[in-house]
Image (cartoon, rainbow, N blue to C red):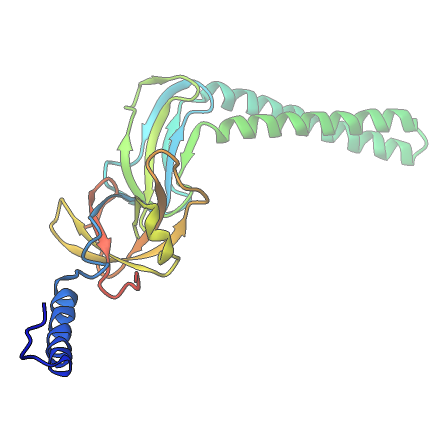
Length: 259
């Protein structure tokens, strides 16, 4: 209730002086959008991974690498004992060479009018047949070797020399040596500002180090149950101590424009 001694103009002046103070206090107490976002768990994954497995069964003849070794693309990591395939391939090679000699002889005789065209065609077909057999054995021999598909490090060795493996059994796991990535599920409410190129701050549990993250990919859908969306982000800076399998917590960077 306005005191009788106070005019309306004076009362208005008091309100005008008090209102900015109230608004200022409210603004100071309101946290920024970035500070209200709870940390989100992330998992460190390699830029590339390849679990090499046996296509055909056999016995492990040699393992050429050890755990943690850095290998170049094309390096043979392990091999199976395929001596029987080697023997069949050698026999097929001998048969192929013999077929070539027969074909060349028939072709010469045909030139001398001493061999029919059908005979030449049959020997030519025999050459193609034996060549195809060699290709089959070459493919089988290729399955006896486990070759690094990219530059990387040996993350796990599942077999030992002399051990028998069955088709589909894991042999060696290889991870890439490129920049690791963080994979995480973030609240779907972040979509308003989250996009490729956005930045996050990450703290790795195992090392205690902080790293900036740059968002690279967003899933094409939101999980209807958890109301989260899966994203991937690249680590920035020195990542020599960041290994696949590590985990930590990520929060929006202070410079992120979440509004």
